[in-house]
Image (tube, rainbow, N blue to C red):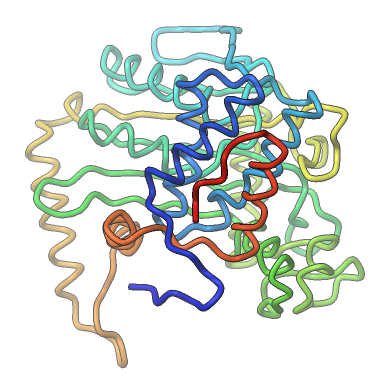
Amino acid sequence: MNSLTTDEKLIPAKQLNDFCSRLFQTLGVPADEADVNADNLVEADLAGVESHGVSRMPIYLKRIRCGVVNPACSFKIVTEAAATAVIDAENSMGAAVSKKIMEMTIQKAKKSGMALCVVRNSNHYGMASYYTKMATSHGMIGMSATNGPPRMAPWGGRDPYFGTNPFAVSIPANQELPITADMATSVVARGKIIIAAKKNQTIPADWAMDRQGNFTTDPNEALVGTVLPFAGPKGSAIALLIDTMTGVLANSMFGKHLNDMYANFEEPSWTSHYFSAIDIAAFQPVTDFCDHMDQMIREIKANTKAANVQEIFLPGEIELRRRSERLANGVPISAVVFEDLKKEALVCGVPFDLN
């Protein structure tokens, strides 16, 4: 689906996963947790979401080295009921602790029909749909969201207040591909602007504003300015709701009170997450639900196409196709990211075997 650019190399997904896991392990991350952290990043690259892929390895490793992230996952339950929990992640790596909490959420939903858990004192947790997809294999609808440091001004403002606050929902089907909607509340994930800056590329003018509140195509100006919410006031409203369902509900930091993982290497980021699972069997037979989802998907795919449209895609469909292609052919890694990984291998004393 994607042609390889001249500055990219194709790396087998398992090889990339094993390499990243070894880097984490040199800094004290237990092997099983290192595998989860690496898998989360590689799965993002497989889906074509390079902004949340292995390009994040340098900042993850740097924060562990600086002592502002706990390399070994630990957490404690602050409050708990049959279908809910508030979890203190004790500054663990986001992906490792989030996988454990989503597993807890699924088990609670099996007993209660649905469950909701919130996590505080965590870190960047990667691709949100990594966790929601876990629910579909149990015949459930999965939902997750996270807040983040101030990147986006509220609608009408110019000072960053909200994070890009991504959220995801995954819904199972039967014969058809499952539905997965995974998106930031900003026009674009900030990680894409970071990648553009690394590659010395311009960005579209509707992605961000500079510090003076002017639209900019310079990614470096955008990184010190503010990204824009998608759909204007609607995206801004959803960012507010997610900050409420994560930071506020977890009795933790929200809005401008979170720390920037790229700028503050002395304090935790204070990131919060939200995980929810709905057991479809509590409402109707799972097979009936999935058959109805198949019907809906087929009807949408059969809709009369607009001009110049060759195929109608459902949320997550392109990413699943891309994943299959990249599992077969390799994950494209840009020259910039390739060199970053080579440098990390040297620092960590790990053989660089991605050539």
